[in-house]
Image: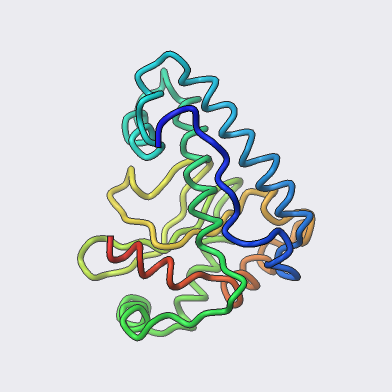
Length: 200
């Protein structure tokens, strides 16, 4: 998909994730914040070669390009948010036997995975993202990125993400980021989406 980029619809209804994430939070987060990144990106790439590129190609092309940092930031945030929506599901899921085996091999147990993923979300300083990623060698890792950064620019394939910008949780949890992280990890992770991403 090239410019003009459009705000993708949510993969569920605005009230589907309640009470973990309220319809009010989703309305502001998707309809205001996510949309603002899309609108700003369209403004920034207009008339430039980036307008012919996909979001991911823009991210990779501008990762270390300080002159185009605003383009990188808005493309990264647009891509990260779409990935975040698909990382969530109102239908509580368990990972497949293959995915569970990889998680246990990589982290020792499902409980340890949840603990480490939550710790990454809680300890990310300031705004950013917590990710479950593949390193390409049948090993899963948890990583944090600040602001608009993605795992792609660090050679990792993202499987799931958790948004820890304050706008993702503040209306529902105020400053209780640990409660938000715990609730999402326990109740909303989309393991079918993670499996598709692992398969490439």
